[in-house]
Image 1 (spheres, rainbow, N blue to C red):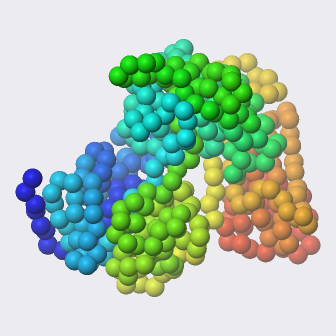
Image 2 (image 1 turned 180 degrees about the vertical axis):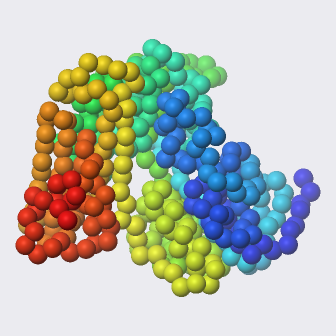
Image 3 (image 1 turned 60 degrees about the vertical axis):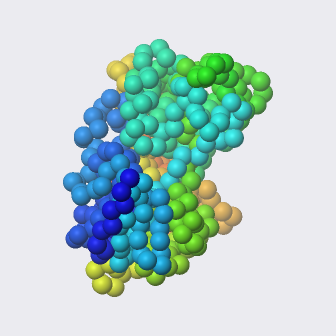
Length: 413
């Protein structure tokens, strides 16, 4: 293929995910290189597409000029050029890596470099559409991983009529965000949707058919038990996509290391989103990616701005796939939960909890000194706005305030 060399663009962004699209919307004249054939979209809503609630065009982000279906294969830092798989060479004054993350493929027996038929990651819109094509009422589906992504996938598959089993290695669901009591309520809600939940359950391998195109037939657990599966979803977390940066000689630890101006070890190269590591943290969250893109847009415009980290709120809404009789464990309608900060108390912390079994509502906050350390709200989120703002701003709680008032509908203020 003939090599095409282009004049230097002021800013080139590698990656057309949420961070890259945000930069394109805020910085004039950006050249965005996007590996996916789709226009930029909101990854947070992929489970809604899988459930059939939204079509792909509904989750599209505001239009941006993107070179779709083009993969950057090498960064020439000496010449400040990006070499692409279509033969084009794009010069830059500033380069932004927004390469995102890859799904973690667990070391399972029967899982090689090529995924067997029926085994699906759940990270991109193409992953989502392939899974939606494969699912049908009554199909047996096993979701491996009980974090936010696994819970969302299990719920969406259940809404499609699949017989879903969720296998989680940890003690309870969404361990990073929820305490044991909230996780138990989430589990009961999923079970009311027809999802069979297994916790403290280690997956050992996949049993597949023989032949040139093996297909998954069962998921093998460490205790020898097998879960019959026609579809298996891998929701085992994500890993920063930093290979391009590493090959270019940039500093990479867990992710591409950046400073408070989102600058890498090369002053002409920045990184944002899931691939970036700031102050030892890789966030892997949409909120952090957007916040980093906003700060970087100011930096690129020559205005003073610094990124000091993100205090992110996790929210999840689960809906019942069909009306059902209300019970104490599974009321009619959906479920809302929100989690922020560290909901696991340390010695000396104050913990305040309110639970209402009749309304299937639960609230807990952890107070460390005179500040909120974290909290979980389940079912009734009326107080979440004030609590989240207090935590995000790291404001001191008013002296003499009753801690119980934190869990009233106005957050106690």
